[in-house]
Image 1 (cartoon, helix red, strand yellow):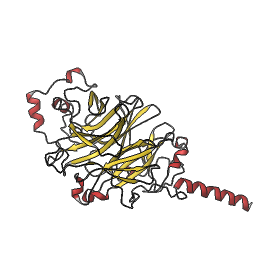
Image 2 (tube, rainbow, N blue to C red):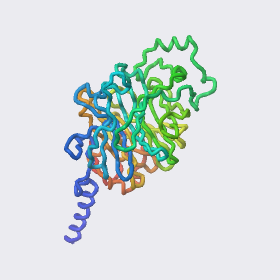
Image 3 (cartoon, rainbow, N blue to C red):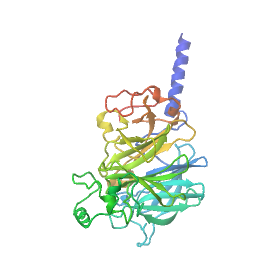
Image 4 (cartoon, one colour):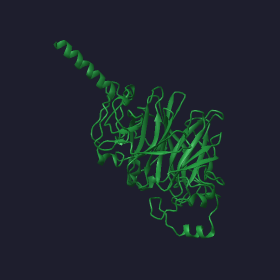
Length: 412
């Protein structure tokens, strides 16, 4: 009997070690300082990951200490990894310019860089939210750069306001008209600071920006199964999300886009596809302060989109601020079924370089909906078990049942 108990205890210990990564020295610690192979903290904020030729490449904003680090002083940093745990510093993929006349002059704002690979042109294409030097957040442009090698160096091509001269696909015909002089004058008097407001002109700003192109701030890229690429971005003074198809070479908007959730003020978009459905995780617009994540789903990328509520599970005081973080990207894990990682940032605007990385597994309830739960530590082996057999719903907040997964889950 003692031998039987000893065998059971040994088996449980082995399972625990494998799931928490202790045996292999491979484990994620969300919110902890994460270092590269040189022992330096990983400096890739608001970023995303490209999997190419068996290697993951993590691109993100290079931050410096203090408030000045919120502005682009260096550029876009890139790291590589074969296993997602250990990362090699590959240097600066896109450098800012010392020319003050450049669109990417030192001190401009470069946020949320994402890189995708175009198999037809054999180019790596980087998009990012760009604000021009000294203009605050008024420019609201999308910067584009390309490289022949995944880690760079990337060559800056220029910026654009997406879909100039194009009307959204999902607005009625009677809205597809320029603003009248009176409408334009009225809008010019409204103070819009990028957050919710009572007098938000919900169906006017895309008309205002028709000629010059749509505003594009927080953004992500998504490549569908057929190779078609899309840019998802906060537009219309942050009050509306837009989903825009890219050209075949991924270098510009293709002139096909929709407006999503007008007047809801979403930012920090992160998109993924699972079981034939498209999912979109966003946050509200509260500046640097975190807020509750939002989840939406659609059967086609151009909608219609349906709101599913907060995807985070746990105590109310933890999930109303998304575990004190904001969404950045959803990473499909290569070689594992139904395996997606929610990547988020814990911003520190007073000392930008100390922003922390929050990586958590996305799980699926019995109803098929994604949800996110805090883990003090976890590892990729946890995707080997189907969480859908143990969870009841993906969007029940506070007091909802806790899935019995192999992950180490405690209070945040």
